[in-house]
Image 1 (cartoon, rainbow, N blue to C red):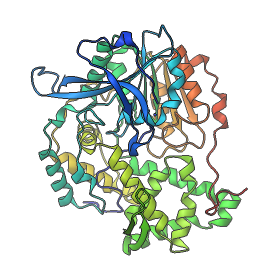
Image 2: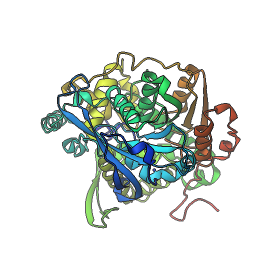
Image 3: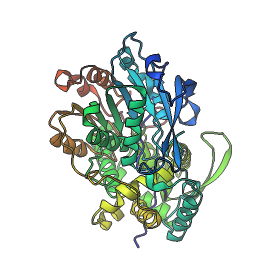
Image 4: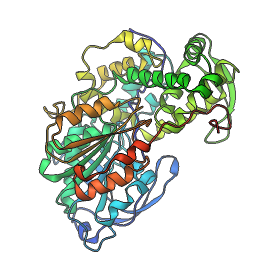
Length: 493
């Protein structure tokens, strides 16, 4: 076995994003199997409250056994501002796997508000996530340490034993059927789909299964169907961090403030591997004083998750320097604690495992262990996934799930230039296969760029016209990486 620097043993594949609402079209709410009522959508951590109309649709757990066990799908509809809305609706699909689409929408709804001028917005929590029969694994959420096979096996078995549901039916192939059932129940002719991160896999597979029901696709932080999530995560993260370090070195102010940053980081990683440091900090969420023993896993998860967005990536050189030069490990501890708390609230680990163990690990091929061990994240995530999936029941997938997609559906592909998990090369791969697509890369941006600069306007225009050739994307060139923080006061003036 390959032991190495740790991330988190639950192996959260990535995050995604976050979203608003109003009230849904009465004409569409007459489906006999659905009873809608007023509701509030909440983002994770309880922020971003949005008024909506919600219903719960009961679906067979196993589509082949309609009279067997069932799952509940939570649905929200937001009515168009138009008295005569278009016959198609717009939907948002979160990533993870394991993230709630309702929560995503509640946090970032303003990004999509212009779409409501002509169309209803329909959001469905994918089965196993959010409020749709969630599959939780608190036993795995608690694992944050160097890889321990026995602990991962015990947590996986305990997790599976605690389910009332059969996790084999919480996969992408089953979820797209759920989504089309909702579309049909609400009476919409077609859907335009936005998916982020793992949500791009769901959106693309929906289009594969229901091409005549798919009006347009927007895929952001793309996971190409033929690639496996997980094995490349550490390598992609390392490449993004290497570019950040090189950018600091080429920036006179950053290089003067943090000389030899790459070498200092390597020393810091080795130092925390050999000798973790105990610090006392105020919990960033509760304010409660806590003692945290900061190890290499805390530094790794801080580096990884801060690199997801340009604003937080700009803090990385300062945080490295504070720990290496000043011996101040509190920023690492506070960020790691905040990130772990947020991940446990945002990602349903059981659903994550159900997807990854059916759709990724069996297709991962040869693992370059040397490349993983050379990265700051190491091989822990991949080792954990392999161990979990040895004990996880094999899930239901369509035979063509992993085939490249070559449909003529209008498709807008979004990538962040500095995305640490789904780099622009992934978007380019899908763009080369889809004959009616446009690939837009946000300079200096991270994972999920739907809310950056002029991108919300481009999304709204594309949903309105379903014509990528009519988009003027020059405004995207004005996006930039955030200047590095040189001290606690921020970037250079």
